[in-house]
Amino acid sequence: MGDWKRVTCGVAMLVAAASVVGSRFGQARTDAHAMAPLQSLTVTPADLVLRGGKIVTVDNARPEAQALAAVGDTIVAVGSNLDIQPYIGSNTRVIDLRGALAVPGFIDAHAHFTGVGQAARNLKLGTANDWADIVRMVGEAAKAARPGEWILGRGWHQEKWSGRPVPNVEGFPVHADLSRVSPENPVWLTHASGHAGFANAKAMELAGVTPATRDPEGGVILKGSDGNPTGLFNERAQSIIASALARDRAKRTPAEVEADLRKDIELAAAESLSKGLTTINDAGSPPATIELLKKMVDERALPIRLWLMLREPPDRLAVDLPRYRIVNYGDKRLTVRAVKRAVDGALGSRGAWMLEPYSDLPSTSGINTDSLDDIRQSAELAIRYDYQLCVHAIGDRGNREVLNIFEETFRRHPEKDGRALRWRIEHVQHLDPADIPRFARLGVIASMQGVHATSDAPYVLARLGETRAGEGAYVWQKLMKAGAVVANGTDAPVEDIDPIASFYASVARKTKDGLIFFPSERMSRLEALRSYTLNAAFAGFDESIKGSLAVGKLADVTVLSKDIMTIPEDQIPTTQVLYTIVGGQVQFAR
Image 1 (tube, rainbow, N blue to C red):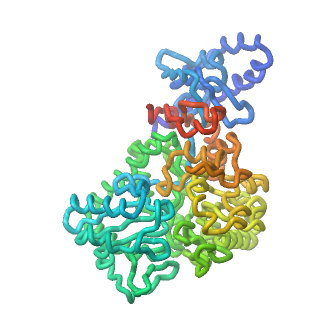
Image 2 (cartoon, rainbow, N blue to C red):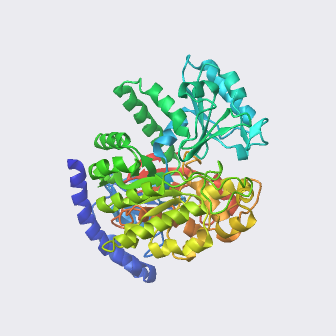
Image 3 (cartoon, rainbow, N blue to C red):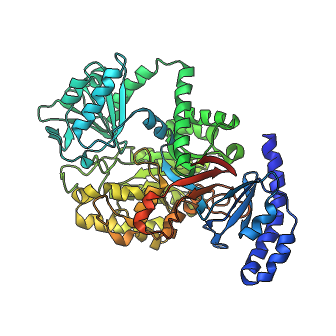
């Protein structure tokens, strides 16, 4: 920790000097002679200099630059190549951008961090073209597995297959083929959304599932016309299979548990950094994960910044909230200052809670998962212990109920400025038009995922119908024009954690088959970049230290192979990450 303190003191002096330099930047743009005194200014050499590129700063005071300098983890100067030349010393690492684009380090405002690592170790089912592909993948895994070993996978989505499986119930397969290829190994395959899962006969046997097993509150065990479970467990019903898996995993020693979690963290960090992310807002982790992350920060073994939501039921929150609130722990590497709850499920599994029945299955309007009383209790605890409340809501009724609870809570606590609390709704995928202005009025942040719009588009119209979809599906522009803050992300591992894909979806809203999904809601490129940088930082109370490239802020920078702000739109997805820099340290280089 001592080294960090010495760097901080040195940075403070340099920031003061850089303020003078910064004041001359404005003169330099209008008076060419201003460069002479600027070059003669004596400064302490920087540890890192980027030069020779195009830097889009997302800072209104200086929107673009060619170069920047950092000492320790902090930016000390931003300007032209000539401006930054005095900061280059014999020990300065100089990266010549060679015309490449540098932007503030991408911040994913909603991802499941350890889930990214877990997904890297399990079957990746997102590439499956149909149910037969998944059966084949599981069969191959079963041949290589130890007797009784669980086979895990994630990423399947029945609406993205080439056709419906035969037989099926409500469009979902039945377990017979899966059970045939893996008769002795339990199989648990999580839906791409994370809101449903599919089990084979062995997994259901270990979980004690029979035709007589009742649906748990907030969940559904899908059954066929004969009353037998199909293998599909929706929302809270997943806990039935998850409990059987947990009993098996409980056989591990504490050292094995920590080693597995550490591996998940290392894999997730490596993947995130390779895709240009410098900060992840983790959408719900338990205390054990927080404890290990703190340990890794102390070991200087966490190469990325994490901002976490603590996810527990209210009875546990009452115990743990006073214990776990930390802000920018270590070298601003770890923050825990939010609570995560979920009012409904996902659209793909028809779990999103809607005001009206689904157009393609009128017998259901979705599922309320965490009870409204649960969320009310969580809101009171968040107020008491100064946490942000972040609630997953996808359907229009889910969003309305959460907004109602937020408004009621703010009204009960007039001593608190509701807008200053920056409470969040995670996903905000489908809104009734009447609720759109409430986000800005209440100061509620819309934490949305651009890539969900184009990923979901092929089945949104079937689920909602043209009118509902047009009025309230993924309405980024309507929210922004009403004055709401929209932060972007991926919901990984539901989607790939790649910010370039989500940026492209935000500005193009184009599906794989070329459909432009309600084009009036497209973001401009600057709006999309801001949603992935400064807005995402604001969503975590971090806008004073990250989200733009300015003197005094953290030197978190992403360098891209192409200028995503100007190249033809269809070239954006081909852009690669050249460097990911966290606190002035290159954590990824292509």
